[in-house]
Image (cartoon, rainbow, N blue to C red):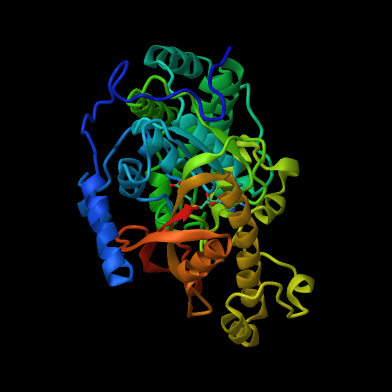
Length: 446
Ligand SMILES: C[S@@+](CC[C@H](N)C(=O)[O-])C[C@H]1O[C@@H](n2cnc3c(N)ncnc32)[C@H](O)[C@@H]1O
């Protein structure tokens, strides 16, 4: 029987085979100093999380680099809070309602806590499950050999038509990827299948005709396309290399890490799940990052969209930007935050005003569910920057602060950090780009 329940058993880092980074993180003193500064200044305290948690940039720590999911949280941030006694005690229940590819969940396990999450994107849920489940190296290596051996060009796995396959992949890559996926699905099951599908997904975009510098698929053209196609790696070799790297990464998880329970929608969290002692999360923005579109090539290959319909998946996404004219034609706004901002935008671009209004409505619903999930005296760490809508600053961090204060939480600390390496926004939609400062707010439920 699987002993992993919602929060699984304790993942004690130093028991069993130790995690190779044996640094004993302890940020109690630094946290105490920041708190006293905040109380004295009555204003956000400037910090640099890369200095607070000195890890070196782009560090290949445990399973964080398993997959290039967009807009990942800087791992130094959860690492800091998960190792500050003021926020967590050993074996805390840590929850991330917008967990994406699982940065918070992985760090929670590495810090000896239990973790669970939610994400509306089925690809994010697949990756987060794969990244948080320890599987012995010998089992994975054996399965990898079988997958590679059983590839048979006559046996193929279909592509669900959420996007035009022939636009994004050239014919021999289509044949090779379908034979590989077929072999994975014929020869693997359970957690190993999840692991192999997540590895498959992390190769897909690299093998497509899309611009590798952008998080959403944008087809290359002319010379850039020709030179990209000239340098395409072999499908089987790329998959083998990726899987081997990820097998090594998984070996750095505590052996007790038994995968996280991941729910689907932060607005509809299950009330029967146990409460969380700590919630650490970086929520989506209004119209600034297209998670479903960024995942669409993998969603197509892995058949992750119900009814092969990306629009239905997008509808579950807070911050989405596709609305029909009839949805925003009335010009009536439901929530009463940011009225002036929304009225100003309304005269320039009614669709963008509607996007902002729906975002605030839906974040209010999510804030309600998140607050209910938090145990009494529990802490919520919210990591959020501000962004632009129609070229105007949209104060997301202040608005979300107001939403959570209205839910009865109290603010106990506010920090700001410059973001230096997140250039993940779409090229097309420059007006929605994020401002390069991240607010980190710590709330407490009384
Ligand atoms: C800023 S990203 C989180 C990234 C994550 N911290 C990581 O390191 O990978 C925001 C996430 O919110 C998710 N999201 C959007 N709407 C959601 C909803 N209604 N419920 C849960 N997750 C949602 C998106 O799919 C995206 O993965």
